[in-house]
Length: 257
Image (cartoon, rainbow, N blue to C red):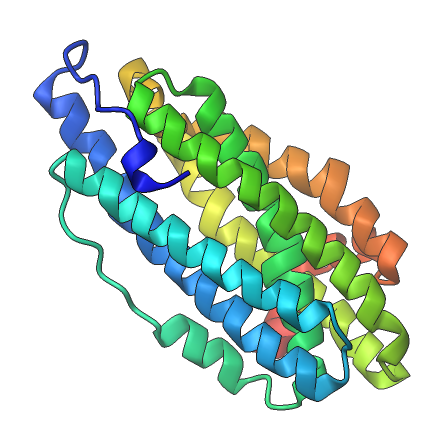
């Protein structure tokens, strides 16, 4: 969906305060989508060096364009809602890549954590947001992104399965740890803040969901559904012990620190 295809926002049903709250999400989404583009760019380069044959490097490169388009889309929606311009910070991506100097390990780790696991969780979160969204501009933008997220998570799992036979035993063992640490990180960033909101019984205006902001309860449910029903079984199918990675996610993280 090109940005010119987006419908005009319909904000009459909402108060200024409700719109101000909801529009803050769009610059953050734009920044996250650009970080995803940087991950896919690094993955495409590492895949070539690691010996992954076509069409894999080209597919990863195509995903870069998808994520850049998402970033522009989110920035455009935010601008239409008078949100602040996105602030892009590439330090987390640079720190992640600095710890993955071996090209084949970089390709495998990025495919596993950021693409297979990360894009799967992202897909379920965007689906939940689209399901609740009522405002036309918001719903159209979320629908556009969801379609690509479905393809990206599939690309992660199939790409990881293609790379797995190229991995020596030591790197396969290292990926078990990557899975555990990655799951812990996802839980800390996505689920735990929402759980704390629920524990504090923070009020949540239903209009926020209509404007594309996930209810904390919905966010928690979508996260754990994605992990337990999809991510863990698919990890095991590829060759990583999914249930073990999940059960040891904080033990492994503490050992790494």
